[in-house]
Picture 1 (cartoon, rainbow, N blue to C red):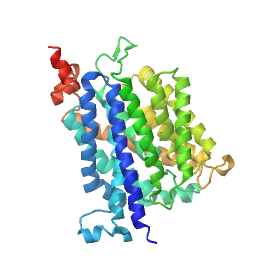
Picture 2: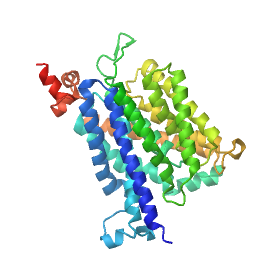
Picture 3: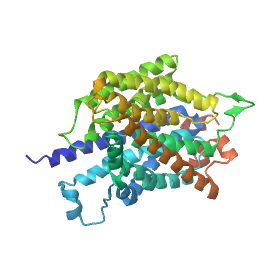
Picture 4: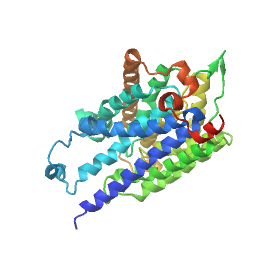
Length: 402
């Protein structure tokens, strides 16, 4: 039986689930920022997806995989020898991963970033920086994976993007938030001043949407029906639960920590979800969840970096841990499937971290030096909703107050 149609349907459903995760990114951010920046958060996540699609279509997919769609339909329907337009839905699926990069960064730079300079950064990152590393790992470009295998005994294993997607997004954001600087009033006279979230139910809704969509993110990374694995589903579930329980305890019942702890567990399990034993997944998730709580406090309070949603520890920190953890818990000695080595996982992870940090500082640094990336003090005080979009999140209520 020809399974091409099944594979196209399978990947379309996966792409749709990951597309839905962008609603999760949007509501997580809208609930965490102050009310005067809710509209801006929602619009930036959506518009970033649109510009990511264009950048990945015209450049990114080709940079990563050497495939473009500049040919008649009769040819692009059978690209790579696969029928039913498989490579087109494969593009859609991988695009939703690529577009997660600006969605992740958005949470760090929110409340003080200018709109169009941020769009420019999105296009450069999704068109060039992210697909360069994606191609190294998932397409075997430049012989990098072959070098790891010959040097350390195995290639770098990242099944669903702990490092390729989340580590990259989190550590690109590091450069962005440092170059932007803290929000006004966040730090003063050596003190850290709390800036309260606007809507905990929105924050929780965002986390729930992300958690549900993540099963498309991980399970459908198999790329076809035949490769789908119940192990990936179970490991994703247990890592998510490990992350939220550990964050609940470490964060002392804080709703922001518990909802993000679940996400930290899911970030960390992406890399080894097809290899590790379910008990290993629970431990990986728990370490990621607790690590997010302490990492968030370290970045915000000790280092004085105003990363609003904590995307550096959440996606960057947990992503790096996930890449390395696959080399530990994926070993047969700990009940894993094997086929990985600790050194390959370590080197591959650090390579991604290095490219992300360099890319973030380069792209945002160049934009800052030329056209500027930060809202004026007056616009930041007024809020990005009115300053950029000329409308608030509750316009009818606001009018009634006048």
